[in-house]
Image: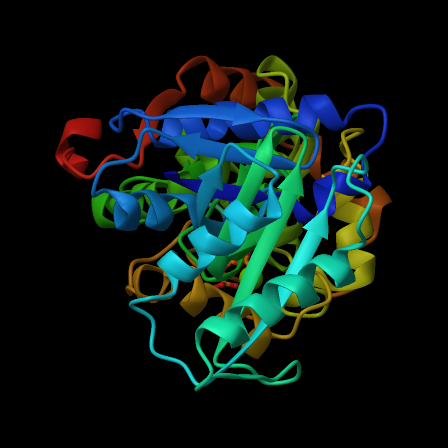
Length: 396
Ligand code: ATP
Ligand code: MG
């Protein structure tokens, strides 16, 4: 009898024709995450099995809990038989050490060559256990112990406990997106939500030294590192935004500063995305949060690009976003007090209903195409992995 880990896919099983692509991507992601462990991974359309485990169950399960596309993680025992008597004896052996008063048996029979129904098999196993251990009783509603038995084509799998995975789709199975990552609370949460839907992220950060500090940049690197746990690794693009921002500040009416600045960010983000084969932009905008996030503002800003923009937290309120950022452990970093380029040069009265025609007119006052070209030409790329050993200094 081999002890192994069984993985249930959840939502992936709703995929029909391209289920293999999803499951294959999941397998690759697990392999990358577990590359230090000597395990083998097998799969079929219903389940994935991880074999070759030592005493490293805990490490492996903790790693699996950071991988999207996994619905449940189960430590199970594999028997190379479908013979009911052998199965019953093995279960009796496995529950010897367990303390419980009540139990139930739940059978799943994906091997349809077996003539008995799942319910018949459960009650036969239940009756056998009751005979051998008269002090225990059956409780189908609230048992101390549930004995799960899965009869598959190549054998039987027995398990007792299961742990929840993150759900969602395997990262990369839906292609690539470019996350506009600031040091704030919202964008890391937006990134996490996109990864959950199978989007592999690259990230883009605008910095404005000397107005923004190295600490602000390190904060973004740290946030990207947190996200890279779920994303395998992250390529972080850093764009020097100082010249563009100063030029806007000098030449454009101040109530339009933020609107124009964000139009420039979108233009640059679209170019970086297309160059890197990312199909969408992702950002942390939330409807109504600030002047640049009214519906009219969002329209005036969005209209300078053709690429779709996904805003995962658009309809969340701030408290919901904060709760998620605590859950994914980006909150403590996000609240560090370093200024972002969006918070410098903030006008006293930013326009909340910007006129796109005026935006275009104002933009003619600056050589923005040249400035964008220059910023992209000089941009820096930092590759971030989630591996513990590396210090942030190594990335700089
Ligand atoms: P906060 O949590 O303080 O609202 P924020 O990052 O959401 O922080 P906003 O001013 O609301 O800041 O910006 C809206 C979105 O624009 C961000 O979520 C992010 O996606 C993008 N953005 C803002 N500043 C930058 C930046 N410096 N680099 C990259 N993206 C940025
Ligand atoms: Mg925000």
